[in-house]
Image (tube, helix red, strand yellow):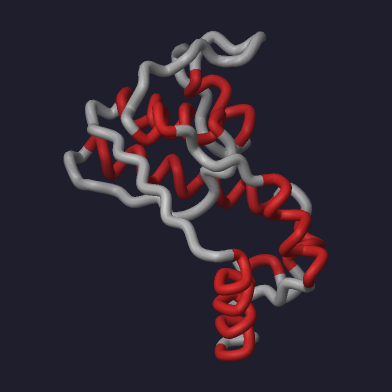
Length: 144
């Protein structure tokens, strides 16, 4: 994202959602071709995870959710080290950024990790892929 949006990530507004939507769309096309895909970004909310699972299901693919944890101080140290090692490729994160993003993340519940049935999508969406196309604007809207 740094080459596309510049070095200060906080300034790019909704551009990340546009990029994420395109990456998810490419992943869906690859799944439809029968190849495995790993999405290693986002998935910060149950809704995002449900939507991605529904998209994989539509492609006829299995979906696995893997959740890894680190002690918070180690996670921050690793993020800081990545920035120091590659400042032209990685966005620097201030202490406030770490705190703000941590507050936005909802860890998956055990039933999510075990592949529970998808709940209905939020109103007014007819399907999780429809919700996803609203969340990630460049993801084409499905036929519900």
